[in-house]
Image (cartoon, rainbow, N blue to C red; front, side, top):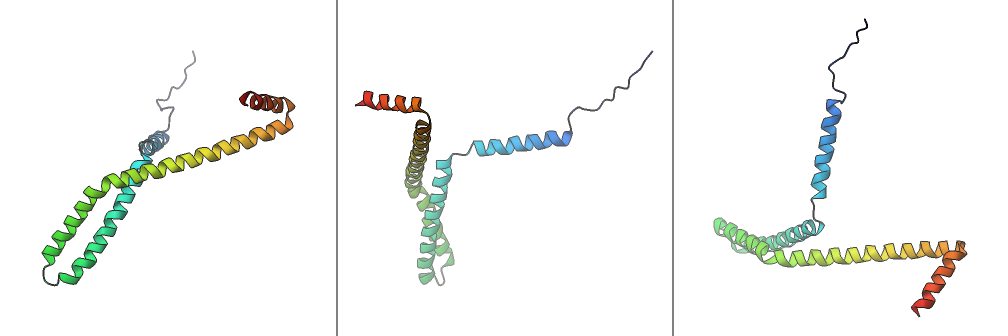
Length: 138
């Protein structure tokens, strides 16, 4: 009678499984990002920080002894800027992304047209199809 050893080892390596779970988690994080949201957040942060710097410069000139009042005014300016500039930053980000998407589509269309023309120069059947399509369009 033959007996075979059947080890109880897992066919998968635990380190590889952990690595794969980590990679899938990280890719899931990037998949959930909305480009317009992140751009609008960065624009909003830039606008708010610029306003806070300007407010700090103004407060610095008149707040020699009233440090608490200066901090309160600075925080009010910061929160007001966030409240007032959120919508314009979002619309600016949407316009930027729309323009970028339109530009990318134009470049892709030009490249596709160039490849089609190159193919038409090499293959007379494609050239005749293009010529018939143009004549139908007229």
